[in-house]
Image (cartoon, rainbow, N blue to C red):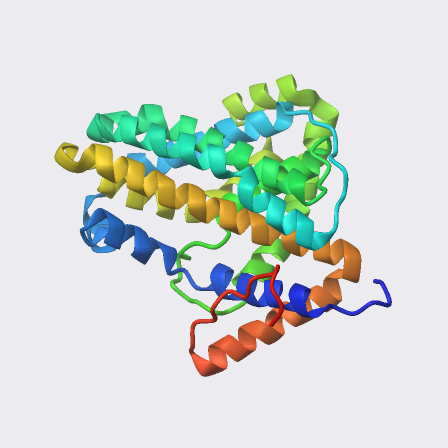
Length: 296
């Protein structure tokens, strides 16, 4: 931990992060964009096979994570990294929107083809954002951290909100990510892909089992949105645009927090995060984002 305390802009960032990551309101916005109550419909319409489709997509992305090799980008100041990351995921978001529209044109049948492609695009976007914050994508652990973004910032199975679940999830995933990274380092990308295909790696399976439930909540919403072919194209594009924007935002907060942890220490950053979360919870008010490039 450095002797320099968190400044106003870093504190403002953590304030935004705590509000966004702990309040699963984004699905409501997606539902409004599509024009029907997806959350209610999802509880009645989504078959178990859809959740398995989401898990298969994550398994494919994990294989990509094992094989992806990239050099570390130059570490830059936090404010510059935050600004840069906002543009980094733009083209990936556009690509995800297009694939969502194409998949939506074929209704439910198109989801099986489109979802793995969309998930892969989102993973690449998340990885690019991680790189913007100075993460070393050459490290398997960092690439797996990109995968964990799919489990943050969305509706939780228990429905609880404003409970610092992001930090709790980080703690719960830490050892699983570390073990999986060691497996990737020892087996190599090709070996990991084969182990995933056979389901013969307990450490990778355990990590997937922790990420998949929350990601599959997202997939259930997407499934409902694309269930009606008449609105499939518009719905598929709208939902993918919202999902890509959501995961890009989660990635910016996740890797921004990690960057602050490297600079100020995890204890100080988590304490500041919890402080803002407690204030938001006590007032039950929505915290408006504070622009990092402007003074108060």
